[in-house]
Length: 458
Image (cartoon, rainbow, N blue to C red; front, top):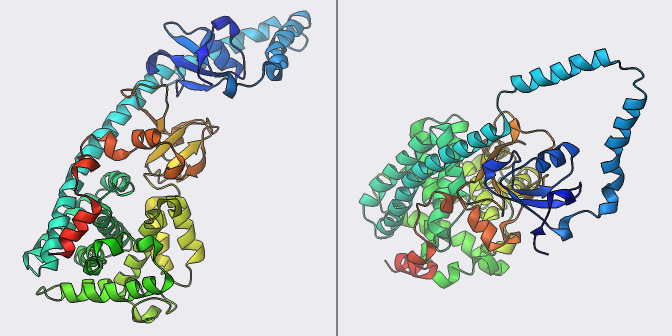
């Protein structure tokens, strides 16, 4: 049922209300919520310049809270008749203490909201700056793929420039967190290129965390960028069927595209052998169950072990069939629990430490029944990240940024959410690419089939 008008006299505990007015016209984190505390009820009654509505379907029955609303009055009456243990002299210091504590408060609720709004503006500007750099890298990556397929030597030079740019972006912690917002939200029709850059970026982060020198990290990144280039020997129609291949087709696909990739990059003079090894071995597994050669732990390079972990993570999060995609926390848990014998656990642990329990870009349910997207990891407490909250009652010009480490412990993440379980409207509102208002719409991009066909036909 839709919200219906509510008079102040009808306010009570258990009502699910909506406050129509500026986000700054009241002290609450969101414009719609259930009234569960008497102090909140008193605050709402004192609001001015707002309109109140309630949702009968999401409100508790009136009888459920009838006793609660009467209890304070009875207690107050008892205290008046039976002062008992507390004298009137003792009540004075209590009032003075409450007043001094209120004055000592570092900021009132409205000031805090203003600070949260400013935090969003900083986040938006930073995301836009990093997003601009990343978009340039995406466009360069498309040209690089064309050049490498055609055997043009400039392809390697441009690729080295790309990984150098990514290294510079990721060398700053705040930039890496901003970039994670973008690589966690693949755009339609750009899956191949963004998967390559996702794996490249995350491999760089893991490589830096594991102490690789810049020279080695960039060789690792080159291999990660081109790890799937051999797939472009297949037709676009075959690639679009990756998620529904038979067991035989998938085995053939995993065995052949690494070999095709090696053949392509070996045509380029001075292509680092460490990067070639990554292209060749990223589908191998430590127990010998991988492809194309069934190599085991000691036969696989460290660089290939890193990329196989990151590649598996991104594939789990962005399955060709969206209904089979895992949310980031599920994917990390799967790698840690289910892949102990197949994937290098040092790289898995490093990836988890970089991404946190709820990686940037994760959609989450909060204990106040709101939905949000994680924008930044809190390294001191990974269970309480920074979150951009969706509220259907809020103006798009008044977005809510909450740093859970600064909120009361009662406000917390309850669970992560699969994107497919949200309405398109909410997904779009929480899409970091929309927030920065920078990237072109999917309709202006090449179609997935067209883009892949143009590459495969080069």
